Length: 429
Image (cartoon, rainbow, N blue to C red; front, side, top):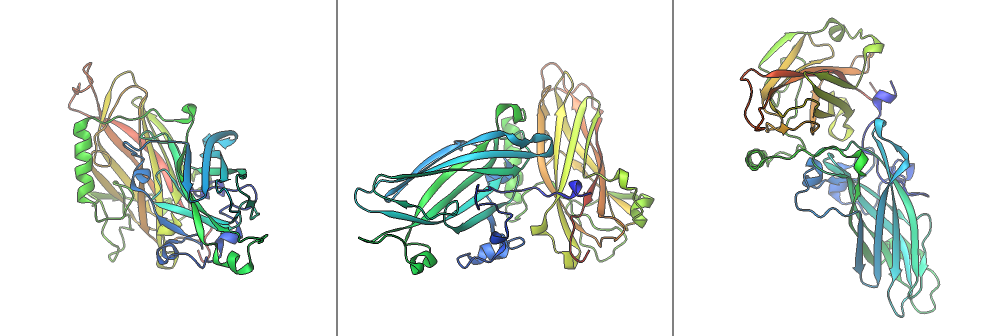
């Protein structure tokens, strides 16, 4: 089940030492802000993400894979591109490489680079990961007037392209440096410890999917956009990064919190979910189902930063992609989910109009994609890593030649195939 338990959200990996999964980044950083410390997951500092990247709706933002920024005596340029050889799209592995060029524009001063700090946010994520440390690719290069330091690094991302944007991630950062005094050859230990006396900005840029990896974009009408943003205003006090989250708790638990989308009813649960005796060959954290010429794909991943193992609170993200494989326009009108947590006698039924507050129209070949959450209050069983099972359907209508008029008032069903929320290997579980 190791492959099923892999989590999303890797961050840039410098050729020498910028790998965010390295042990060095799991140490506490003395200069982390209080907010970063609170948001850190497993010792990795994190910050609240940009909402446009979280939702994959970047509007009028100019999407550039490069940037050039002047700060004091330094110019920092970056360019990025997709690395086909190190990517594996079916496994949601997309690798990018980026080249940094730092130029000392001072006519007289010598500069020494002491450290770096990057912020990166993958599309659909509600948080930015922070990568920081001493040096640059294991060095603390000295730049005399007019000199240039350049290096290339990689960013292996675990991310899925979505239909509303062409980006995989956004990145920005800074390089700390000092100006060496006359006759000074290197920074002193105190200067290195202090992190330098100035910083040069690494301007914002994006990792952009090549055309063959992009999802055909879903375009809303103006009316649909207005409805969507009205929904956003109502939810503006919440810090969730999705509109269609499910808060599922065992139906047998009288003290369980209320659901975010109130179950309209419940159904008898599956016996193997009640007793935890689940056939291992049936366990999957994704599904891909075609019905009525509509394909519904789903994949799920664990969200450790929003979970609390000691309190049996386990949060998952799940990504849905709905593709119209028919020859006519369709409109999604409602959804219905069934979810059963391990040990529960019943399935909760969650249903409602629209999809994330919208009723999107899909032309032939177009896809609609969104990411939502399932915060589960459930005690895992030792017999299985599965904590919940989910399935459902999306109701849609076929549209006439004008592309907007329903051919029938009776909707058809596109099935969301069975998938599971699967715990990674957690201590104490």
